[in-house]
Length: 185
Image (cartoon, rainbow, N blue to C red; front, side):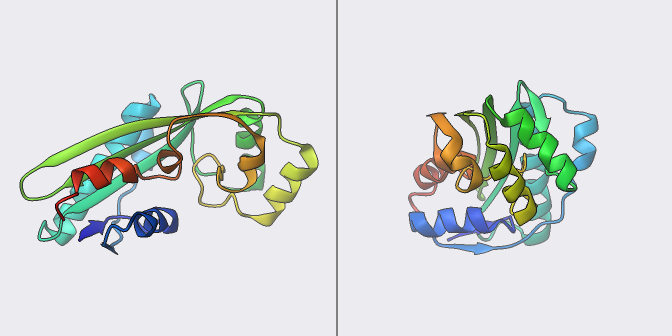
């Protein structure tokens, strides 16, 4: 049994599908301040995951091992955060259209004896997005709450020309790696 320090439905589904028993426990951590300090997406995502882990340990303790994670989307090392409105989502998605997009996840596992930090990158090469399709996606609102306004398991899926890495990383949790780390639980 592990504690997933996240409200992400996608991360919870990944754990369910992998057969890892968990309880989902939210943590309150504001990542936005980190953007002022960390410009490199890899540095940022690890700092955010560490912040979430610290908040989780403080709130819940380590009676149950904790997993915390953060994911960012980047194009040419520019961090693409969650869009605040439809116009910002359009601009973010246009940067991804026809480009290589890196989805970077830092996952941290912590129990009473060890801490394991895992940084992984999945890169997608996207074909150019169809304008009408993009407009429909924007109107649907499905981009809300998604890093880079991107849903590789949804809207972006049909535009994928090439994938370098694991889908689970792109979905926010390296469950294959977590299964190795937590195999004795």
